[in-house]
Image (tube, rainbow, N blue to C red):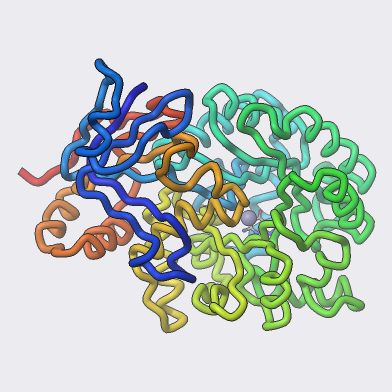
Amino acid sequence: MTAVRGPALTFTGDPFSDGLDATMVHEPDAIVAMADGKIAHFGPAGRIAPLLPAGTEVVDYGRDALISAGFIDTHVHYPQTPMIASHGAQLLDWLNKYTFPTELKFADKAHARAVARLFLQENLRNGITTSCVYCTVHPQSVDALFEEAERLGLRLAAGKVLMDRNAPATLLDTAQSGYDESQALITKWHGRGRLLYAITPRFAVTSTPAQLAAAGALWQQHRDCLLQTHLAESRREVALIKELFPDQQSYLDVYDHHGLCDARAIFGHGIWLDEPEMQRLHASGASIAHCPTSNFFLGSGAFDLARAIRTDRPVRVGLGTDIGAGTSFSILATLGAAYKASQLNGHSLSAGHAYYLGTRGSARAMYLDDRIGSLAAGMEADLVVLDMRSTPLIDFRMNEAGTFAEQLFVQMTLGDDRAVQATYVAGRPAYVRKTDANRSP
Ligand code: GUN
Ligand code: ZN
């Protein structure tokens, strides 16, 4: 058994439905004890310390730390790591100008492996212990990522992109080949160790009705797989979907019609949805991945979180970096952007609700909240340890932050990868920051 000690934050339920008081646990001096990849004990240090076997090593992170369940990224494209920060285009042009040429290179497995390695290291540097990942159309791009994730012991979901139209010919599969290749990848990877397969039609612009139907048939045979795609990200995209699918009532209806709207579906973005679409997401149990840095970068819009989680028909919402349209691997920075997206819709997202979104809320969006996303005995031991004074400015500002809510809000407004002191995967340190805090003298 090993253990970490310090202030801790976790959630026992959903603060959007039940309030922060009933669901947020802030323990000023906690111990998280870990054995066999799971959390064995969690609670106040005074209560847990006597439970530890003699000789248990306890790493004490001190009172300026914050221990939390590892961050979760519900929507990200690992092959787009090399093209993050590409200038001057909105969604559909950006795909043609930057994304497709970048993804073509993943026919080369060695290239895919090198990018997968860097991507997963960057995740760990940012405290992300689980992500739901788009690969490219090439099956070897999926193998490369899963092989690296398996080596690191990560819980991770990923899938081969399906696209059979409206992209360069060399990047296309067919309804049949995409089905067959996905099927083979599911057999090989889904449920192997901590890995999960996500059936991944890119979006309805690049999949024919035949391919969407094939994806629906495949999901029907593998109901415990995730399904991920993009939905109503930009207004031009929504208009194009109307042209491509004149018989469907809405964008979501295109997916629904093909059996792609159900529990364990994660729809990226969902900015431009009408009320019947929201109702349908709620009724089906499907989730939205909110990707604010991407939405601002591409000029797609400001997702209305308060509307999505309306208590009369709450939709499951997780958080996504959406690299490479997203501009940061940092979940803290992404939460800061989520705050700004909410502000543009007239709501001020609280820091507590935001942290829920980056941890347990995202686990719930992936239907994994029984295994990850919170600190509790029996949960998988994936943790992030934050340094609450990671830069001179944050150190200075923290002196003025009276309440814990204020301190948390400072982190998500000013913090980034420098705030991640350590990341634990299945009970083992997978990343430890080398340099000490960048404090003022
Ligand atoms: N819609 C279809 N493909 C993509 C993609 O790769 N990134 C984003 N942001 N939106 C998409
Ligand atoms: Zn995306």
